[in-house]
Length: 185
Length: 185
Image 1 (cartoon, helix red, strand yellow):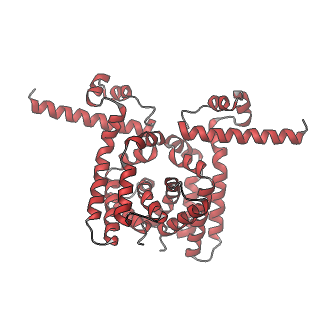
Image 2: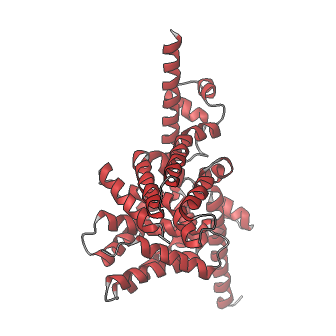
């Protein structure tokens, strides 16, 4: 095999491991899923999985990282706006877009308390929501403003209760809900 | 022991089992907690726990039931109001009050995906939210209205991110968030 083909195959194996892990985390929970389970599901050896992800936590982080990167980009785009109303619009539309595009990842992230506890130490979501609050409301947000920012992620998750909506409508419904939720003052 | 004393002791044991179960469900998750674990934690025999709760699911339902009863009462009170704005206010204030009074129970209910899946078949929360949507918005709610009603429970849970708030302020902040979230039209 040429190096290019080998790299492409490694990329595909990595993606397959992430996808299978996400599906198992969602159905069994993070704690009840082992790297061995993920290997078995894919017909790989445990060593092959370890080669790509030295620990289950690193595997989880690799799944979460693109979501955090998107959230970070949304906050940056919001910070570049000239009014609070426009910053709120950018955050609402950004989260709606992110949620609808990655329903599976986000509902796993939001739903698993074990993962949640585990992620708290390791993760950046708390920091990111703190940054979002500062971009939207300055250095000293009120409790109303803080609660609303914290609630963005969970409201987004509620869209899973409306599976009959197409992606475009789901995105619009969600963006409107987040805009209502975020106080203008 | 007189029958009255015995009944009082049974009531206390029942409450202790429910409280311990809730704490273990919250830390370990519903699936990873057995009736034996609960018995061990309390220094009871498994038979003593079985006497009060023939299965783990019945124990869970006994913990959830008072929450559902409160939600049902909130919906009934909302239905008795003469305008949508007043119905929204009653729902928002009722949920805020319920959440702040029972933060522990509600965050367990909201957070555990296994429990969530298990409860779906057995539980009434889906029905109750459907009833709330009908009381607030009639027989054919729009997707915006439905999403907002579904999101009430999860927004309430976000209050746990603000542990420094006293109960009264937490209640007011939450009620205002739910009122903003629920569309007036």
